[in-house]
Every structure is written in C-alpha cells, then in structure tokens.
Length: 500
Image (cartoon, rainbow, N blue to C red; front, side):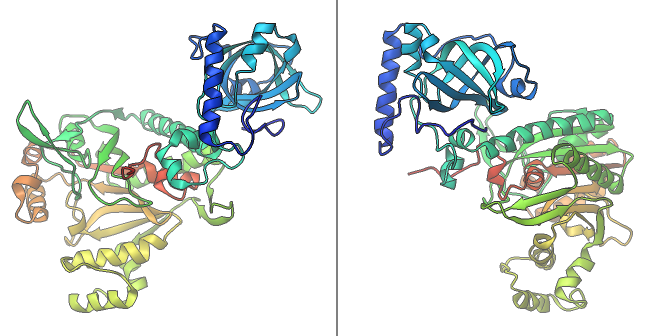
C-alpha cells in the first residue's frame, strides 16, 4: 500500500521515537479512555459502504460522494491539515481532512486516532496537485481502536518466526505477504472453475477414517468416545473418491485438507491442502495433459506469463522457471542413470549403497533396495529439476494404487516435478480388486489389519471403471507460482512449536 508521504512514527500525535511498546500501548489506552469520555464507542458497529478503498482507487473519478471503511495505515499530520492512508488487503487510498473544518467534538475524536485504527469515512473524491487520488473527509466513524502499534511501515517484520507466529502483523506490515494470500484464494477459486467447466463434480469425503489409506504416511491418531473406536485423520482422500467412481460418479474432484504426522521443513507442513480428481475411462497421460493445461492457465492469468521468477530476500532473481509447453517427459530409470551411472541398475544392492556414499546420498539401515534408488532420485534428480518434468515409468513398489505397465516392473504414472519438488502425481488407476489386495497387503508388511482398507477392496469387487487420477499439492503449487521460498509463506497459519 503506497503512501502520499512518509507517515509519522505512530499516529497524529506520536510519542517520542524511543518509546517502548509498553509506553505506546499506554498512550493508546489513554486515547481509548478519552473516546469513551467523549461518548464514542471505540469498537463501533455497522457502517454502510458504497465501495472499498482498493476498488475506489482502481475506478477513480473526481467529485464523487463515497463511503469507505478501512484501517489507517499511514498519517502525515501537518497541523491544520492531515493526509492519511486507509485500506485493507485489497488496496488503499489517500484521505484528507482539514481539522479546522471539523466540529469541535469531531476534532477531539480525531486526536484520539492512531495508525492501525479502523474508521469509516464519508466524503468526496478529488485529485491532489501531485496527481494522487484522494477522499476529502466530511465525517468519520471510529470502528475499532488498535491498542498495539503496527509493524514498521517500510520494513515489515524482520523476524521470520514472528512473521509466521503472528501472521496478522505480517499481513499488516508486509503488503507482499498479503498479496500472496489474496492470489492464493483467487487461484483456488479458479481451480474450482477449471474443473467445473470440464464437467467435474466437487465432493466431500471423510477426514476421520478408521484406516488411513491412499498413501504411505504416518497418520495422526485420535479416538471417538461415543463409538469407542480409534480413528485417524486422513492422509489422502483417494480411496473414498474411488468409491464414488464405483458408485457411478465418472468425474469427481475434492479440494481437501490432509494430515501427516511427519517432519516439518520448507516443503512440508503436517496439515496441507490437496486437490484430487478422478475421471472414468481416462489414463495417466490424459490427466497429465489436464494438469499441464491448468497450471499454465493459472500462470498466465495470475503471474503475467509462463516465466516465473524466484527471488531471494534482497529481491535478487535466483531462478526463473519456464512453464512453456510442451512439458518434458522422462523415464525414471533414465534420470537416475544420468546422475548415478549407466550401470546403476545392473550392480548389486550392496554396490548401490556404496555408490550412494560416493554421491553423498544419506541412507538409513532399514531401507529396501527400491527405497535406496528412490533416495537417489529425490536427492539428485528431483531437488535439481526446476522446469516442469513428467517423470514416467516409476517402480511399481512405490505406488501400489496404480496400474502396472506390461512387464510388471513399473506403473502407469507420472510424477510432475517443478521447482525441485513433486507438485502432482497422476495414475492410470488400478481397478483389479485381486491385484489391489495383493499389492496393499505386500505394502503393509504384516500389519494388514491396521493398514489395509479391506472395505475398499470389497468396493472394488463391485466394479470400478478404468480411470485416471491426479493429486496436486496446492501449497507447493502456490509456492512455485508466487516465487515463495518456503511453504510457511503460503500457509496462513503454519504449525509451529509452542513458544515457551
């Protein structure tokens, strides 16, 4: 939000610059008490508006009577005249008030206002000599008195932990952060439109499940007291969405919250947003085309084109991602060979472990051979792939819910890698109940009762049509499209360790 001029440190009558936060709060509480003495409710009530500050600025016309409401984000007190900025996350506009033209009681009320307070303004628009769209205040209403000072207008929050722990302050002091979340909301709405226009039905499936299926991940566990049974928060909605395919829903999608009781990193939050979609009579190739079309559509609509710049904290461009079509397709084994050697799949498992040591790829003792290979892929291929790449012919051990390709060693899937991380997997869905049972039981490794959803397998026995399916990590997609360096920058309230 731009200002006509630099604001005073904290309002119309700011305390000394060296004041502590406690002193600033004390001054604001005195003003709060003064407002009540003047018969003003410091926390207002309904205020009818004709437009918003952002809309008014975008469609500005002189000599127009308006009623707007917003937060005071800047004040320049010139004695008898005051310029101020009023706005919200969608934008702001300059206001002007001639103090001597206000009634005496209104002058006293105005003196109680600070940067950060919410007010309603009625007035007439005009353009200043410097060309700034402005509202000349004729009357105002106090809507909410802010008792704590806003973050520094020009530097925002310097401490990243405070940025995530107190998101409201980040949104107040860092317009770039607010813009990311506005864009995120608009992108999610556009994704819904994208699927609706293609005949998909949006559905909702359970978040509490008796068996955490649809992915290999550690779930959060809970207990339902009335039924006396253990439950888990879902790790994926896949098995319930496939039940709908069996029930005759041929095109479905769900925007959902998933929960995985695993690590936290710049790419992982235990609670995250996914879009999953399933289309009967399709395969993974058709779903790949669908995802490519959607991501490019979002980039062109919200990012100004197919070149996405990623910048460091100083604003220097560190990487440019090129989403130009067509996107690359590549074989999983070929990509691994490029980084680990042409003979990597011909040597013994023990030799592969030794090769990983040479490559600097860390392993754990309990990893099976296919997991060792996957670790090489993740660390040496995935993390270094920034432009879009559909990785195909993935080992069947990794994905038990997809159809096996002829020969039985790989599955009909793609894994879409962009910006060094998986953005979307897509499958030709396995619909043979006997093969599905066998593969899920093999994955469970002796814990079938806890890990295999036999009710789902029974559902498949009623007949699921061949289908293509996709998952899209919304948080990671928004990271890539907005240039955000960490998932915490695109999740409004990321999970943080409790402050001691």
